[in-house]
Amino acid sequence: MSARKCALVLAGLLALSGHRANASSLFEDLGEKPGIERLITRVMTIWIADPRVGPTFADTNLPRFKRIIVEQICNLSGGDCKYTGRSMAEAHKGLHLANVQFNAVAEDLQEAMEQEHFSYSVQNRLLALLAPMQRDVVTR
Image (cartoon, rainbow, N blue to C red):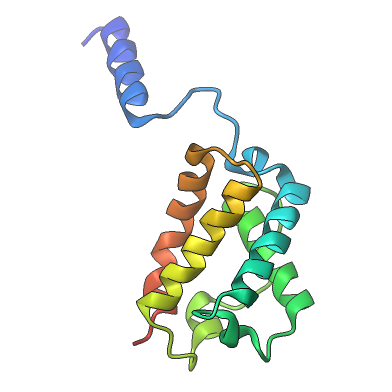
């Protein structure tokens, strides 16, 4: 196959995948660390008020929790933050969380992202990074 054909095939595959050659990172699209901090502040308020997940946070050190979640989102989204928290399996061990709680956390995060005026594309990119954590979080 000629170099030109290879380039055309690659360009077509990239177009089909939704990837843009000069796409900004998710970290940038979230507003970098200040944007992530605003998002987590907002979603924590929603989580605490949500009867499906609020009780889970009753004995949580909220300032530390916020710092850890910001680090995690920053790191996962392409920022230069170092995640200092425990593994998802270790952090959720013994909480006996079900899919209903996991889904509530995701729904509340999506609501917070809408309130922060993130595009659906950005919302979906972040949720796609977090979805695989379900197997480590849900234990019943």
